[in-house]
Length: 346
Image (tube, rainbow, N blue to C red; front, side, top):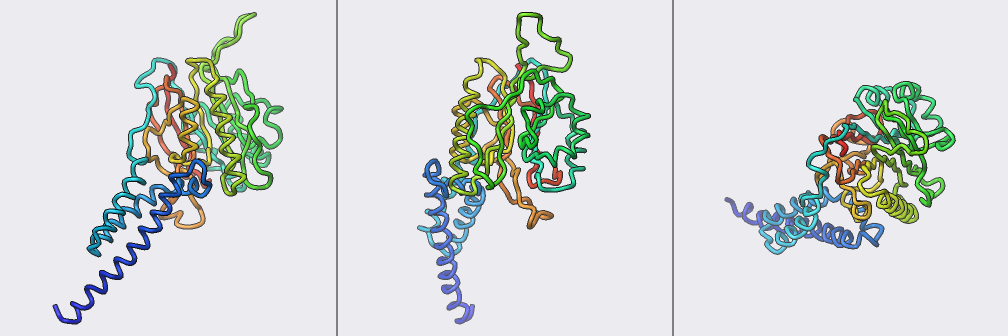
């Protein structure tokens, strides 16, 4: 090695150490903010990017080792552990087995400001779905969904949905009762989508009507949600209150009632408000992992090469329901992937 190369090597290490210090400092601040995500708006927003923070922490470890900076490597390791724990820790699961009817459910944010819904309709009608929840459904969008009306025989009544339902449900099972969850806060006007959650009581196709003097008991209760996106502090508060109210409604269902909740939660898996929803409602995530695939992504860049985003579309089930299969669906023209789960009821 020449004298020039010997002088350059320490300089490279100093530069690498300085770059690593900057990266570690940024990740440390972001990690500290997440510790207070249950009360700090920006901390909760950072939970959308938790896997990226974990990846950057791991990269910082390698950079620190190259720079021979043991202290920075140790700090980066601690940050990697803190950001990686929610991704790798085991999560609660639904029933190992059940003996009732099988049910395929799906949720899909349709991206209500576009004009071509052919891929969405083809996927929705050819995927064997029994119950489909949708979000961002305006009156304009509904005019494109004649094929869905023909395929799914049961929908909530028109007087409940109104002209612009926003949250919509299509069902091959018979809806015996449909309502909105009461006391849910409205979204902040003119600041993004969001709609009243639907609560549906369903029975399998061909179920006979109840005899006189008795009520038909639902085989499953399905909720379809879409709280507003937390793009402002007011919307963040609205979303959090929305989730809290719906969680209490679910917890108040009669004991043993099979419950399925699906929708665009605008809340990533790692948000304390999503975890609080699971705890208050008593439900479990059908994804079955602490690091599910992204469901919301940007169509503005890298769409052909990568889908950078976060898992905010969820299917949750009560603990007496068996999750036989869970998957994130294909690109059907929205900026959300659909999510599908094959279930077996108790």
